[in-house]
Image 1 (cartoon, rainbow, N blue to C red):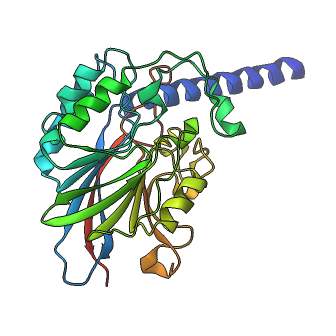
Image 2 (image 1 turned 180 degrees about the vertical axis):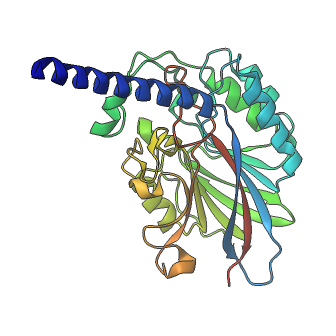
Length: 307
């Protein structure tokens, strides 16, 4: 009788765990489509300067069938940002470029800059999710190549600045903004351009994957603010704890949102730090169509004077 009782308790425990797992997975599928706009102030401008808004987009991972995501991104144009920065991983399907252009069309009329991520260059493939706990995900050399050069041409012709291992500048809200960017560090395509003493009213660093070597180079270049994506905010997080992985060598404490790097925020005593914003991104791989405690996002950064 004791054996049967123990077996019954074990069976109920297994059933409870299985039910809880199924419920979490179901919610994760729902949450993956609960897009949210984050609004963040960055006290980085000189005293007396007028605010400047930057719409940070990342990791859209678009397929042609994702009509809700296309419509949501298109509606962001109503924010009328002074500058749009796209930190890559826009595509998740070889036929997604027209859909992406449809989503971005109203924003392409505004000043913008971009870099690419691995999922602009190559299509997604199924991965063992436990692989991420061993460090950054392995890149399969046999992945399907995506039409990245077509996308690059379209974005350039719209007037957006291509920051692939190079420098650029843009006029936004009456100010000259100098830019420096790198290609995707996750694919080891990153290379800092030659040094330059030319600085605008604001100096931005742009990259896809926030690997420490890239952040160190951008900080050494004198960037006032660095923008990155790639991490998906951890994608599956533990409520009350946060992300378990970043798919890079960045610490999980900076997996998403606004932070100081390498130390505390500049407005909280980080005298040797600069500002870093990591977007949790809007999408996911088609082979992992869920998020948990980590809603898909875009961010409107309002740059204001430092006190």
